[in-house]
Each structure stands twice: as C-alpha cells, then as structure tokens.
Image 1 (cartoon, helix red, strand yellow):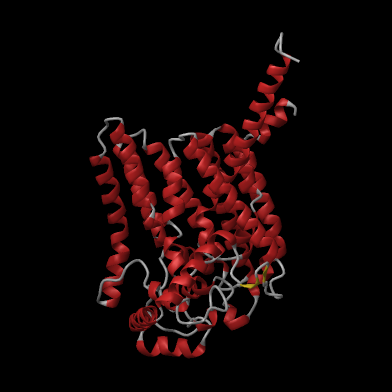
Image 2 (cartoon, rainbow, N blue to C red):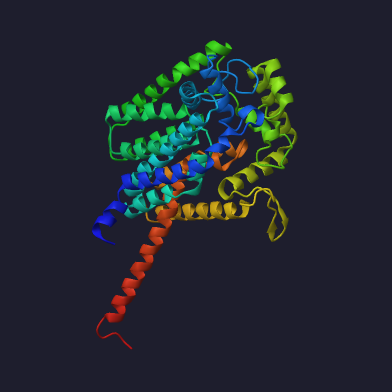
Length: 440
C-alpha cells in the first residue's frame, strides 16, 4: 500500500468520517420508518419520544404513555430532554426531527471510533487499535441502531466507551482535575442510562488498585471523583423527591421490567404486549393508580411469581444470559435444530454473527490473560458486570450495545494475536530450514 494511503487508512479521524458517511447513507433509506403513525407515532422514540413531546409541549418531564399520566421517572433525563429540544426546534414527530435525531445518533456512533482506536492501541497494541476502529466503523449493530432507532443507546455507548478510556489513563494519574472529570463524565453517563453505575465504581477501583501497586496515593483522587459524581446526580434526585414525595432513584421502572419478563410468558424475549406503553388496559391502570403505585404493584407481582416459580425464573435467567451472548432465544425443537420465527428471516444470520463475535471476544480476553496484559481485568470487569442486571430483567441486543466496542476490540485482538503467532511460527520454521548443517 502506498505510504500516503496507509497513513490515511490509519488515521482515526478518517475512519470516523467514513463511519459517519456510512451511517448517513443508511439514514437516507430508513428515516421514513420513524414516521409510522402506529399507536400515535410510538415507534418515534418510544417512551423517550412521549416524554420529549410533553417537554416540548410545556408539560415538563412527564407522560411516558400515549395518555397524559403526569410527572414521571420512567427514564433518566438526559436523552428525553435532548429529544425534547429537537422537537421544540424542528417540530414534534416531524421528518425534520427524525433526520436531526438520527444524524445525532450517527455522530455519537461514528465518534465512538475515537475511544475504540485509543483503547485498542493503549491496551492491546497499535494494530489492534486501528483495525478495531475500522471494525467499529463497519459494525452492523452500530450502523443499524444509529440509523434506525431513536433511543439513548448510541449516546450511552459513546459515553461508556470514553469512560473506559479515561479509566485506562487514570491508572497513571493522581491529578484531581482528571479524577473530577472522570466523576463528571460518570454522572452524565448515569443520567443517560443508570445501568452504567454498575461498572463506573469498578473502573475507579481498578485504577485505584493500579495506583496502589505503584505506591501512589489514590484515596483523595477517588474521593474527588465520587463527590463530583454525587453532586451532579443530586439535582435530579431532588427533583424526583420533590415531585413524588419519596426517594426515587434515577428511574423507577426496574421492577416493571423484571415483572415483564418474569410473569410466565416466555414466547418472546420481551413480551412487549404487557407493557402499559402498548397495552391499553395496563395504561389505564397506570393512569388510575399513579406511576409509583403501579411500579410498586409490579414489584410485588414479580417477587410473588419468582418465589412461587424459582425454577422457572432460574431457567429464564439462563435463557436471557444465553441470548445476550448469542442472540438465540427460541428453544430447540430437536436435538440438532433450533426453531426460528418465520417473521424474523435474519435470525439465523444474527445468531451466527453474535455467537461468533462473543466467541472471538472471549478468546481475545483469554489471550490477554495468558499474555498478562495489564488491562485484562478492566475488560473482564466490564463484560461481567454490565449485562448482569439484564439477565434478570430484559435482555436485548440494543441493551448489550454499550459494551460492544470492547467486544469488538477483544475480537480483533484475538485475530491479530493469532496471525502474529502464525507469522512467528512461519519465520522460525524458515530460519530452521535455512540453518547450515541441518540434518536432512
């Protein structure tokens, strides 16, 4: 390859530009799907779109359903407010808003190439970083989710991947400003998707452990990061307390999601027909009793069902675990066949793709442990902790997507390290064959 072309192909900004161009081409074909009038434009942002409509209409952070139900804590605030701002400028459920929001998603997804490049380079080598950035630019889920769904997934992915990169850098830094930035980014990410709070303390703990091993002080930096994170989250917590007259976490729908997938219906990985968003009877009950009372009742129902059917719950948890890493939900119909829904013609290819990616990623993680890579435990902590909550509630590929960048990096590392090993074997064999005096 000519030198100029090789340098261009290795530029993370060129890769990012290509990634964005690909996503925008796909947006041009798919944006009309957001205009589906089904259930009063429900596919346009789903509950986030409902809340954004209320914000743009002057009703505040409220009404996650098609009917007006009042103030809500159904979602964390950052993304609905972003959508609400776009609605305010470009119109509610308009073509202009759809294009702007999908363009923002595409930007978030494309810019994820930057931390992917840096993480791969800094933790597993320059070749891994460059190839992983290209792999992310062409990653099918990244393209589809950014160009076809108005949701917080792509923003969460960019923020969490950046948080991973900062954690890598913090193992070499005790500067309070850097740790304060880590706490600030962590709070912003949590206000987008609170599930990340399951991994941010682990990132900080890993960095503190690395500092401790080198004999550097880590207590004050960690305290600064924690204080900044808590202070940024406090206003939203105060809003929830003032609104509902009781302590409410960043969002309140956890037990509803647990009940949704643990009440006896195993036909789909997410039986969405039981949601108040798509079930009129549930929506009326939600409106009648109020949001907190509805969520409390779902908590009671979920706990009662799990207690009465612990074996079923354990089996369903295992199925959600399996689905997270393979994309396969349907049960085997025979010892050698898996049933695929005829309405989902891409299921077989998707299962093969997801299973292959997971297998390569865990092979890459194993190689990292065998070779003693310093960052191996940071990858292991992320892959272990982030999906954990979804095993017990709702498991979907888009919910796993925030850790897909690290899966891509590890999968690329597995391939790169295998090729390097084969090259070393070939070189050693050639040197042995060429050695003078070798016995014939």
